[in-house]
Amino acid sequence: MSGFPNRVAMLSVHTSPLDQPGTGDAGGLNVYVVELAKRLADAGTKVEIFTRATQRGQAATVPLTDGVLVRHLEAGPLRDIDKADLPGQLCALTAGVLRAEANRPSGWYDAIHSHYWLSGQVGSVASERWDVPLIHSMHTMAKVKNLSLASGDSPEPSLRVLGEQQVVDCADRLIANTESEAEDLRALYGAADVQTAVVHPGVDLDQFSPGDKAAARLRHNLPQSGVVLLFVGRIQPLKSPDVVIRATAAIVAADPTVRGNLTTVVCGGPSGAGPERLDELRKLAATLGVADIVRFVPPTTRDELADWYRAADVVCVPSHSESFGLVAIEAQACGTPVAAAAVGGLFTAVADGTSGLLVRDHLTATWRDELLGLMRSPQRLESLAANAREHAERFSWNATAAATLEVYRQAALARAEDASLVNTARSTA
Image: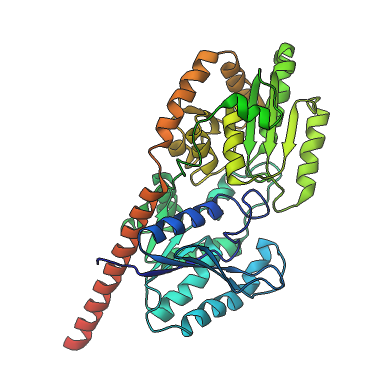
């Protein structure tokens, strides 16, 4: 199937690839969609990304790069709305996708790649209408999240669980970030072995690369000496930034001499519950007596984020669940080791004991001991840092795109074979 697919409809209806990662519902999924689309276009496959319009006067189409077009669909109010309210807009979103194809020659799209269950719902209708394969990436799953809820987090509703099951049941192929995610799809949703394909996300190894730590610290007004811990992500219970703040306080309590030699940076914006979660973290730092150590910074551009990684000694990823962990792999690409929770895709994203550490739980004492151990062993930190870049080099977006293209082709071949069998059965009946 040389030259297939010529054009892919990529669906990210709940969050725009143009949104700043780290704010609202924008995060690793947004980075994934943008980077994959760009690499697919580099390989000769045109990509049209469908997302919901959130601003009045927003252009109907926005070129992202050569070969990649973002299409805005009008569905619901022209503003950000809570993700929980988006199921009520699925009909309008689906109609918008179908209209885009109706104005094009027959066979305009060769495949559909949907991201997150809401997009999968839209994609299932379009796939049936256009008779093209539906390839779906979950990114996160309700059943997985509900099995490992963070304190203060709410269970995902049964509507999402049902919606995800429907997507699994109708998708031609399911792309999992890791074998761990593929196993969850099979065990929790009954996905077939032939239906699931493991394709690791990547990292931009040019953008995220080692650099001058002293210069990076100077640019961000960080002390040249001492240890810098960094958390990057949305401020929500799932990501557990409070774990890093509590560990910081516990480290100071265990060894008061480190107070003048430790800085903890929390980089990210509110998600879900809004700014009150960020206020709660500030109050937590003050209550624990580390407001002078913990520094809060808003989400940054991708280039600035790489600079923050370079400035840090350890990047902390204490999530309660992760299908992969782009923050972890980006940090390692910059030569910075990672301390991450031993969950989900982080088993793949972090080489435990080689490029970082996997922490067995979310207890303050455990994180205190692991981080304090690194702080007291500069040689161990240097060893992890030396290996971090090499580990990250195993993951590239070009490799992700190549493997994804193969999944598209296999899905199309299987669909064609199924159609041939049906036609043969009908002709002999």
